[in-house]
Image (cartoon, rainbow, N blue to C red; front, side):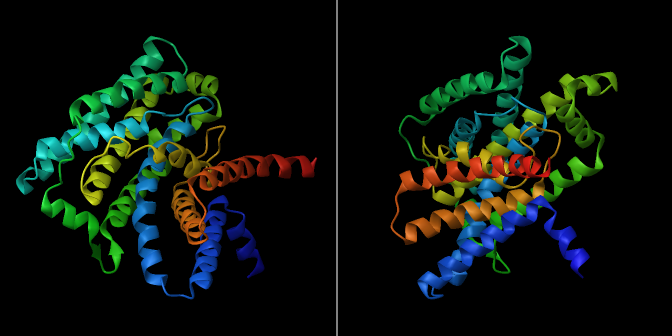
Length: 317
């Protein structure tokens, strides 16, 4: 029994769930248990949006040091704005709007990698530059309007199935697909190999450029899907709707156990980290703390998670 427990606790993703459960219990105790069901459903709902952007960011970070996508917030905004304008509150256009959102993601993913590959600039700078272009396009497209989503789509994103929010079910399905791709396909082994050593991966015949292109495409498409669902859930697209997901997409990846240095990804950990981050915010709101404290705490948590493996390694030597 102790052997099985030690094996379980040796998995990095389990700690994010333990942290989430701990914060959940503290919040419930503080509120007297009055909001247990509501808090759980809210955590699953808002955590699902963090999961979607986190999955894409995880794939990019797995490619190795320096790989990160800073265009995620602008991507979400543009995909939401354009898809809602195309749907024009018509239920018959829901599928078309979804395809448009995916198309926006594909275009941004191609643009990101084009800047990285053709101009030979670091991914951080390339995706940051792309975010300015995309955000400017979103502002021009939005023009101060807040178009409502089709009623069927709004009902779907705000409803639950068997007590589980529908957006969480969508995120769960996509998480399973991403887990399968990472662990059971040649592409998944390729991004891990590139993250561990790009020189060794090149010598092994892995198509470096093609693999990186697909990775940035997947990240952009997942961000676009998140924007599409978030705008439908919140009743329309806003120009700042993706702002908080820049830090969040990185935080859930790091806290969830994905190696910052690349070469190793962790899908279950993203769920635990997403729930943890939402519950921390809820707890701080319960105690009356503002957004500034929340951001400071998020930064400290990320630093602690990054430093913990280093501390452990130093203690063993």
